[in-house]
Every structure is written in C-alpha cells, then in structure tokens.
Image 1 (cartoon, rainbow, N blue to C red):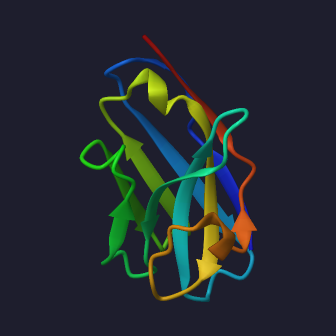
Image 2 (tube, helix red, strand yellow; image 1 turned 180 degrees about the vertical axis):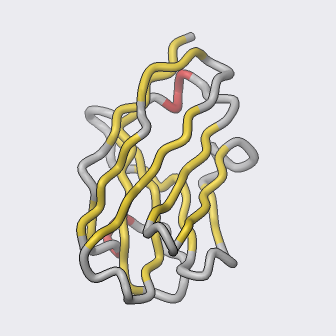
Length: 123
C-alpha cells in the first residue's frame, strides 16, 4: 500500500486546513487509518484514527473538538479537517495505514506510512 499525504501549508492561528491521504495499491483490505505528527527533536505523536467503516474514530486530547478525521473509501482517501489551528499544531503530519478492524493510536502498530506534509501555524 502506498500513501500520499497532501494539503499542508502555512496558515494563521484560528484558521483551517484539510489534509488528504490518498492510498493506492492493495486497497481492498480492511485498513484502519491514522494521522500522526512530528516536530524536530520530538517523538511522533498520535493525532487521530478511523476504522475502515468510518464508524469508529479516536482523537488525541490536544485536538479533540477541533480536528475531524473522515474517509471516502470509494476514493481511497482519508481526510483530516483541522479547525481553530494553534501555533502548537505546527508539525509534519503523516498518514498511516494498517490492516485492522479496530482504530489504533500507537505508531508502532502501523505498517504503512506516507511521506508527510508540513503544517505551519503562525501566531
């Protein structure tokens, strides 16, 4: 499975961005998808996860209520809508996939990773 993340950019605090993660390859399996983020010198941090059906999702406490993860399986794409962005949301955002029927929030549980997209929030 190949993952391609896009949609990052520079935005002012309080603004919004929508990240996309397009999947290709062996997409017929049941994949849980996740978004993670990382800043230099820190470990990769869980942001959000969603099951294949889209019926179950989970968020990090720091983004809950501001970010929304969704997926369109017909388009093999997962989205991360980010609202009310804060400077501390600045990071490289990665999407990830794993064959699972459950949502997963540990990075080591994921088998496939995209290349990352930079999100910068200015104050």
